[in-house]
Length: 141
Image (cartoon, rainbow, N blue to C red; front, side, top):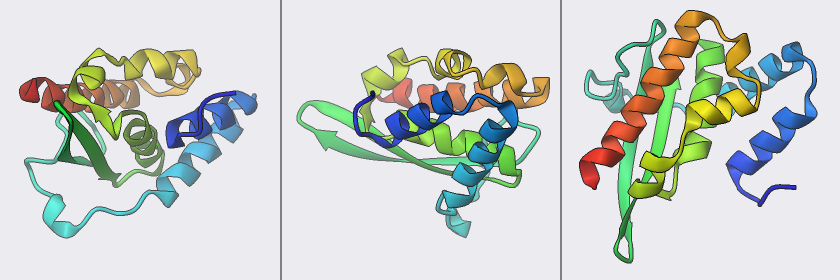
């Protein structure tokens, strides 16, 4: 059993679901539960390039000791992509920038068996979101 974090709960739930259709529905539920971002966050600066769907990611910084931590909010106009955004936010939010750079969310999606069922366009969009998040972290190191 994983530690009690939002991502650990998502991971446990996904590992419990054997059928891709159930996982697909679960991703949609995660997206529906994601708090919408404000209109002032829907800017070109926050828009993720490389996604067919419209995706916005916004970050906030906090300092804990000598480390800078990032937390993310996000949204998408597509239901399944919004679920992917929710998983990424739960995976990366609250981590220090060095951990974000070193964490491989694409590999995590592969381990959970999520990426193999994504269309090529969604898989490319997922990589673009990860690169965007890691790019923000790299810029702060």
